[in-house]
Image (cartoon, rainbow, N blue to C red; front, side, top):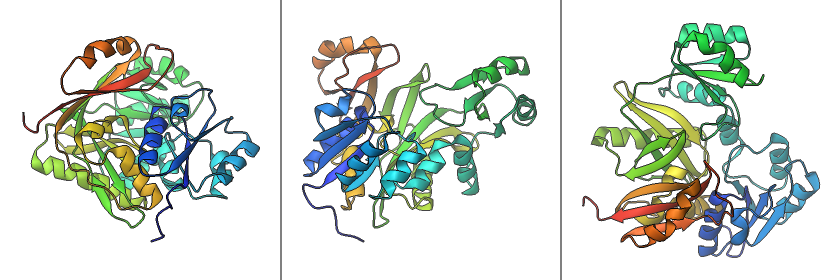
Length: 358
């Protein structure tokens, strides 16, 4: 194993949203500086990062200057263009590496990877043409969800099919890009596991959280999740299996469905994850510090839970609840510094903390 990054080293972060913001805060606590690369002006991370480059991912000169200014590169979202990654990787290590990105950037690649590991997923079929969709409906059935293979998140890039009669509209909604049809899964609840793997191959996982979504966007994560001891162990083992198969370095989010057949993997996210925000007030080492530790070559920290937590996202006008939440006991507010509240926009979150088992 190589030596950890020296104090004062610069960690480059691709993406300047709220995840980049919280990664920058964690890095500063460990004595590191961050340099954020973000195409949009005035991103949330700009308030706390040591340096910010505002340029498109197609700007080769800006990418080269960014790479030259940092010691290692990580990212807060997985949809970084391949050409940009090629240029950066030629100059600096990227952690997690390109294989994790390649798997997570494409839903077909992701499902194939998971199934090849022997992990259960929803039934699925690739859809490139209208005829493919008819064949997929024959094999997968309806109701189902047609999704773009790339770039979709928080319910975007998706169309629901309640019956084959919805096929024309759903296919048109994909606007000619490759898609995947995923069958509906009868599940009791959705949970997620946030886990990390270090440069030395060590693995640490947080307790699974139970997720509730509204309008396709995460609303709350509750820890502990309603799982049996065996289910809890299986969830952590699934995350560890994925981390090791990818030779991963950093924090990974794994979303799982709890079903009568067992735990099904919904998707993986090669980064810190919204459903892991509870760790900021429930663990000695939160997911953001854990990620910085991993990419900097430090030992992984203690992710054991010392409190029960309910994390609630503040979406759009929910930000107006801030003053009232501030009066609550045991409520930790995390706001992202975004100037404009819009429907569906994540403006912050609150962690409501209580003693274990209370």
